[in-house]
Length: 293
Image (cartoon, rainbow, N blue to C red):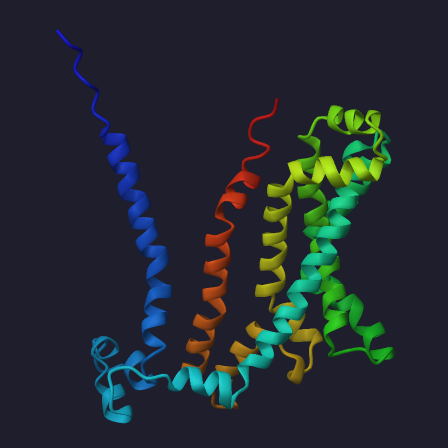
C-alpha cells in the first residue's frame, strides 16, 4: 500500500501564513490609503462629517468636477517647487552613499585583514560614535559652519551625514569581509596581483551583495533624514523630508495638507521601486553571514 502523502497544510503553517498576510495588510494599508487620498481634496480625505467621503469623493467632485484630482501634485511640484527638493535630495544621497561606501569598503577590508589589536579598538570607537544621538554631532558642527560661513549648503550636510553613516558602513562591510576566506586574497597575489588588485578584481565581485545591502541602508539614512537636513540646510536647499514638513505648516502658519500628502506619495514610490529592483541582492547580502564555511 502506497504511503499516504503528507499534507503541506499544517496548523502551524496556516497560522503563520495568516499572520504574515495580516501583517502585510496592516503595513500596506496606510500607504495605499495615502495614495488614494492624494487624488482627493482636503475636505474629503480629512472629512469629519463622514469618512466615506474619502472613498466617494463627494467634495472633490463638487470642487473640481471629477472624483479624482491632481491639484495636490500640481500644488506641490509646480506651485511649491517640490522638484527642487527632489534634486537636492538626489545630490545629497548620491554623494553620501558614494563617499560612505568608498571609505567603508576600503576601511572594512583593511580592518578585516589586519592582525593588529588597533583594528578592534577602531571598531569600538566607531560603535561609540554610531550609538551617539545625531543631534550631538550636528551641534558640534554648527559653530565652525557658522564661523566659516558654510551653513545652509549641501556639501556641509553631506559631510555630517557621512560622519554619522560611516561607523555603520564600516561595521557592516567589515563583517562581510570576515566571511570571505583570506585564501582568495593570497591566491590572487600568488598569481601576480597586488593587494589592491586582489581587492578590486577578486574580493569586491564576491561580496557585491554586501555592498548593495550596505549602500541601500546608507541611501535610506540620507534619503529619510530630517534632523540633520532641517538644521543644516537653508530653505532654498531643503531636501524632501523637511520640505514635506513645511507643507504641514505650524500653529502660526497655515499649511496645505494635500501638498504634503502628494509629496509623501512622490517620495515613497522611488523607495518601493528601489527595493523591488534590488530585492535579490538585499536578501543575499543580509543572509551572507548566516552560514559560514
